[in-house]
View 1 (cartoon, rainbow, N blue to C red):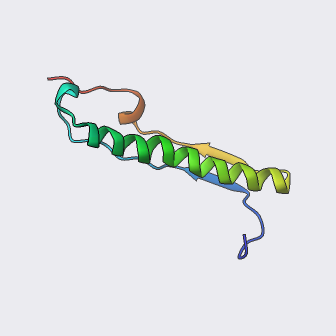
View 2: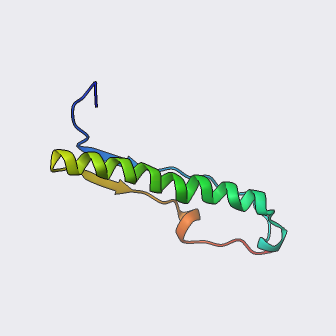
Length: 76
């Protein structure tokens, strides 16, 4: 904000994939890491972006997901 004064648009695209293996072989640590980055990361981006956009009265948020996040599962 110090450099540009406004946040007109934000494109949120945080995400990681996991090691490709069946769900029952995934570790809880891997699952927690994925959720922390993919879900918590997006939450934190938007939390602060929205605060600023409300202050300035305008702004656009764009959230992106890969095909891995929404369209396919992994099975063996």
